[in-house]
Amino acid sequence: MISKPMQSANGTPINPTAPRTGMPSAAMAKAVAMSICDMLKGAEKPTHTASMAEMGAACVASTGSHLFKGTAATMTVFPVVPDYDKYPEYGRDLDLTFGEIGLAGHWMKYLLHHAFIYQAKLRPGWSLIPD
Amino acid sequence: MANTTNREPYQQAYYPPKPTGFTRFMRTCLVWQLWRFLVINFKMLKLIAKSHH
Image 1 (cartoon, helix red, strand yellow):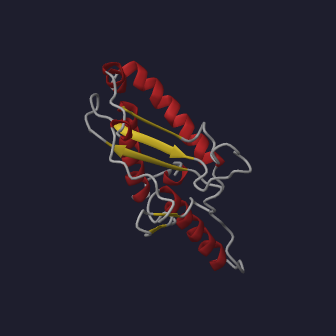
Image 2 (tube, chains in turn blue, purple):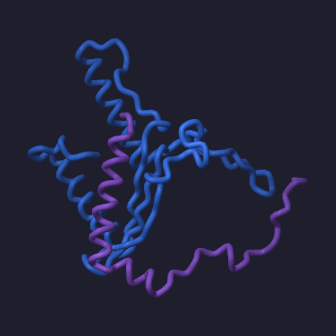
Image 3 (tube, chains in turn red, green):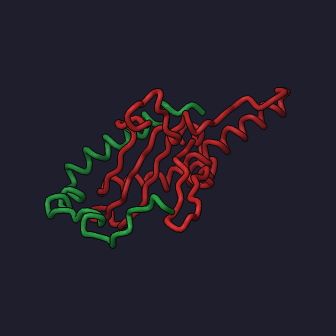
């Protein structure tokens, strides 16, 4: 379960949904694409999986774009779906589940921005860049 | 809903904490942020390596 289903004070259900954008969606799309590739080559069923119980996610939200005075909120979570067997206290690896605001986040965002565009243009070595 | 008890208005404690001057300084301190940049990069690579996809 991604998170506990809740209800508002007047009874409206508040349910968790699977991510439709961002890093988990990208990981799922990559698994699907690689499976399609393998199936075109003869595999009988999908060869890759992308369980949210086994993947982490990161998000960098810009809060100012100056190279020295800008900041960004950086946050990561691992795994996306809490695993209380492996991490009994909170369901997540607390070393890889963190958030902070600072200039480092902006530098990160800047690099990610250019890395994504480099990959999208299929420039030399694009597939070696971690995504 | 019979078991709904959290009906009091918003209180100061519900708002996010206000950063101190030192915290705000550290957010753009070049030396500290360079170190945090390396730490965050390392953690992100670790996160990607641990993800099974």
